Length: 140
Image 1 (cartoon, rainbow, N blue to C red):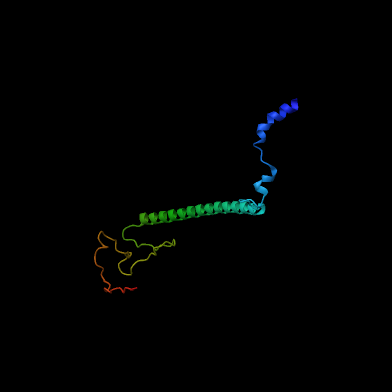
Image 2: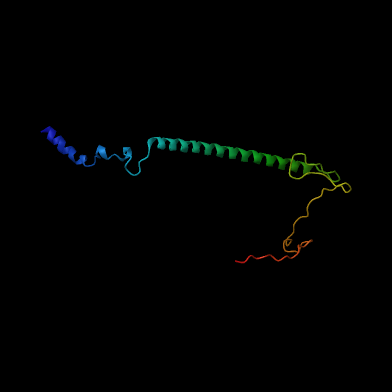
């Protein structure tokens, strides 16, 4: 009697159970089947890619930080040179490896610089205009 009652109580849950023969994860004939060794390989490759991406991000951050420190150092050196420069003194050459090379002209003692751009410079005609050459068009 107790067995019959127990079987009757568990009968509704039997409908939710899947039969062992319909297991799609171990059946290569079912769609969506993945070879276990291939799945392991993909998981390993993905974890390696995540690690490499993290390492690359760390390298980029380190490089950006070093570049920022180098630029700040160059800026500080330039500011110190400007503050130490007294009227009538010669401009010292830039020995810090910056983009501008120092030096002075032989007679006046002034450093040569490019002229500063002004508003409307792009609209004015250049000092050496280019010849007006018509372009060739290629027809069909």
